[in-house]
Amino acid sequence: MRIHFRHECSLVPISGYPLRFQPPLPVHIEIVINDSVIAPPSPRADSRIGALAEFTGTVRGEENGIPIAALVYEAYQPMAEMVMRRQLTELADAHPCLAVRVQHRIGVIRVGEAAIHISVQARHRAEAFALLAAFMDRLKQDVPIWKTDTISI
Image (cartoon, rainbow, N blue to C red; front, side):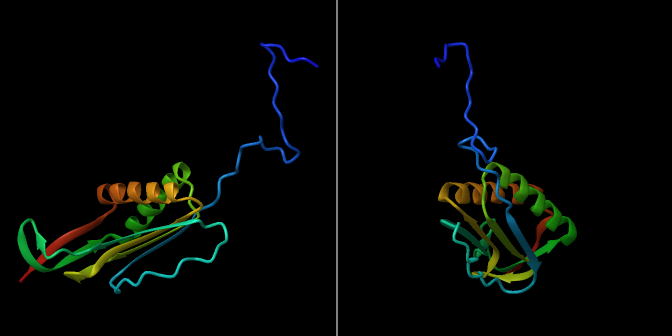
């Protein structure tokens, strides 16, 4: 059989998916917002994971050029968790990852202590880094968590 220029031909494997298509993986999302000290968890055991990207945001010793001893964070927790989950689900469509864990502290957080820790697990580093960077940008814009006060030295 000859295939001429204007004819289309596609090969579909028995599974029903085109040859290069991989069905999207569900992302496991865990969100913790509380006043507990952040202790980064051990990565989930999963043979599909090839990359782990983590970010820890700590309180600096100055805010707007003024030395401080601590920051105070407040959150509207139900909405913060809902917005974070929505953002992570949307971002996982663009940057397929296997698991994301977000820990954000509220209350008084002293200089040098972690205010946020994010852990992203994916098959490849590009997806993990991309989701992490995009989430941090969106988190600061849309999630109802605020620095309400600084405690001066």
